[in-house]
Image (cartoon, rainbow over all chains, first blue to last red; front, side):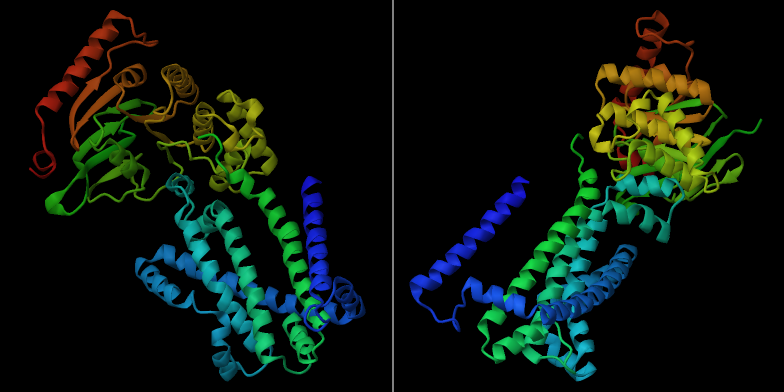
Length: 254
Length: 263
């Protein structure tokens, strides 16, 4: 309750500062729209915003799922083979710092303008941080726990599913957090830079249209939706998952 | 009767052949069914390596290990090992969950209800009945070690391998755990191989004692004492002196790795 209250205070204070800055500075609606203007924009365009949000979430969900599976396979292969691990570490060192958006031109060349390219960029952006976290997680599993698993007769895939996955859950969750953020950034950036094909687009496309039309309140509305979704996912997905799982992994007494 | 566990010319050397730094060299011995065997030696003498080879965690460079006449090489629940360290329970499962998971993995066909009932039995055996729903991070070190024993027994191993199982306990806790272990051994009749560097522990628990020095099996002693064994018995003190003299002498001989392992 206390936490919710402090969050509300924060939101209220920022709105207040925002509004007073606008009034004191005397900026026009085009440069810095007021809270009320943005709220109106949010309300008027709620259907379109919802549609665009759903579209974005669909793309990100799909891209993140693909990246998750891919990163998991690569991380397991890294654990299995030293040579592969060396190779992947090098590839990761090169690819990880490369912004996903930077490969969009190539993606468009390969997959054309449209959903496929955006998904490719999302997968590319999310897979490296995911892999990095998964691999770190696997390596930090206590040797004793792996050996108990082997002692019980587990090996290969079964050892991975029953021991390695749950043991590295904190790292997997951390990876998902980063991956989720990277996927959002990638999807919004891709649409913002290159638009969308066939009239279907996500929140990036929404921002792009509003910017194009100089509807600044709409741009702010789009940003607020993006922030709100980030907060919702953090508090209703990651935090709950963490409470259910990770807290038990903490070895308080040792 | 054929020996239950038979170790033949077991060799395992870490490091390159010309600069070995640890391991065991051509170790051979036998263990009878239901016997409590103690293995003692200074740290680095290869006793943990021996246990890890029997458990199947290390692949030997030479020799073989037979369990009931069959050669074993991979890890399996028939040789369950309790290692050093307190991080052996899965932290994402409750205490009872840990035991049920172990039994379920080894014996897939038994119903969960039945396994839970059995888990409760094993928890009661080690005096942790009331802690089944707690998670590992909520347990003290001594409780964890009891839990390791409960889990190990729950999978019904043919040989129980113990690597300094009570090393992290204080003297009182250690004695209590030794008594518990003896009591459980009496109930289950499991064959036990215990590795320790504690002379008292070795004497109190084992039927027979193997003394290791720098990777080789130097002496085999039969424990002449009847149970229960008390520290202040005259015979106990005498046997203690004998064993510690042997360990002292081996130290004075100051064998180096090259001497002992690579003659």
